[in-house]
Image 1 (cartoon, rainbow, N blue to C red):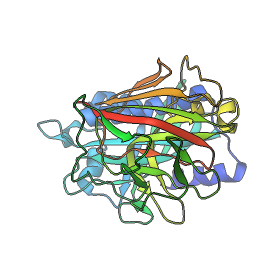
Image 2 (tube, rainbow, N blue to C red):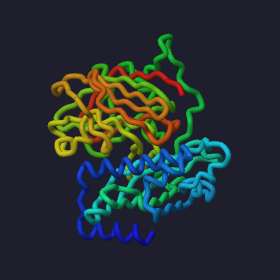
Image 3 (cartoon, helix red, strand yellow):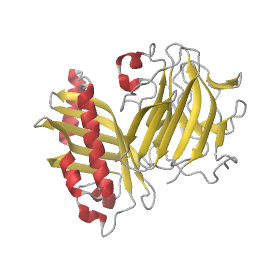
Length: 347
């Protein structure tokens, strides 16, 4: 912990910058490979993703689960444990040319007695030209406000004869509430058959009342100049209160690629991206004011982002999908959606 704290302090003092995109991708890959190996009880693969002096610690977490995070197959027992861990490194900063630190999120899945969720801190080092994980620190926030745990819906909405559930039909907002469980927020409106943000400060994000695991989501959307939003899924936890309302998890990015400041500079922040993780390939947006068609597929560990009929992102997550709601981000800019529907998939 001392090393990580010193690196974070060093980064804040010197104003460390984001590592190059290819290095960030390599770091994300090493973390993902390690977590896949942990979830699959593959000791050799786990050791290949980390340094020889690798360390892992957990705070406010059950000791037996912290032991599960170490690359030792014997902690899994005779059979593969159903417990999985998923994590996302979101903010990476280079301390030196060969050392970087990351700030992110994590969540457990199917942990007996209740899942952990919270913040992840990681240290990456480059040795012999290859990025590896040197340390991981998991801080459970399950007992701290303003973070909200995610409970499965007690009753799932029935599908239609075609297997699809309509989340927005141009009129009703019954499928949604404010993130964290509040009433439908005033910073959204239904007008001209569209679900629209009310641009401005203190926008509140939407959360589906129902929860999902594997699914296919289809929707249409358009934005004004400099618009920014996203559909969040595979959620780690929710957030409400004075710090705002939002969901922390994977995000299908929606943006004015030619006007949003982040999208202009960073490909991983453009429409169709797995936000800040994987840039879209072959994406073509409609002109401003015209509707784009999006499709999101989550089936087990497999994920696909489609934009206007083109598969722009495809990846394998380190874990199966956790049960949870979807959120639609309010980013204080103009965004309109319509024809939002979903069908459940197996597993």
